[in-house]
Image (cartoon, rainbow, N blue to C red; front, side):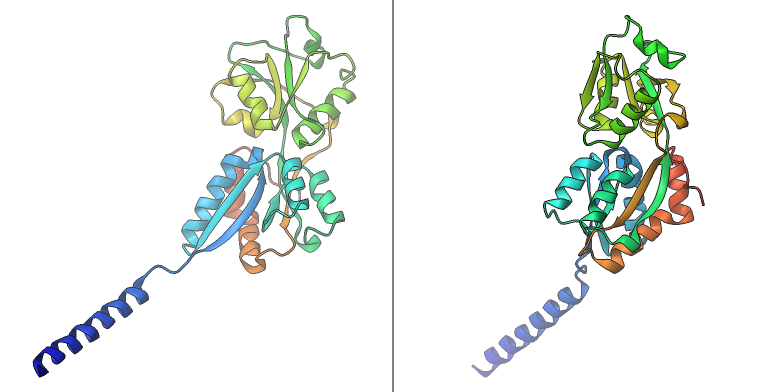
Length: 258
């Protein structure tokens, strides 16, 4: 009887030691960072997040990609986010006015260009007036009501004196949708960022809009109020770092002017 109790005690002690070892060796729970980023940042921010996670293995970054206007509305409605990276200053300013972004944290981290693309071997234009050609069936831009890419395109068309003459414009929900419509040859031409055109093998840049025809395309980034301050600041610092700038350049983004 006594030997039975001895063996039971040994099993309990050994089992306890195994349990303690498992607990000590189990992976620590990762800190999660939620980033809201413009659709045109999909490729580069996926890369930036991956590299950041490699250097910070205790961190998991979750990114919500959508048009800057849609993300602005989500934040206004109380969506949980730590960082907002917009394709337009207008959307960031709207959140600043409502004290939903930490003003001191906002910085411009990239610049872009607006171009006109066509499917490979599609319609060609050499000057803005060619957009009025009767051979062009439909032209797509992002919705200027909510999407920065659409606002830049609309501003350019107005400054070039074409806005009121184009009756074949159709709107897309974001700039990546414009690119998709052109790739699938659902439209003849589309207005997208240069960085969008560079990621596609199925479109051709046929015209680059003069920078003087629209506001400068600036990408601001900032902390959403209530963010995980230290972790979110670390990610923003990474985006603004020299290595982060190199990755942005690889995807066609330009560095902001000093």
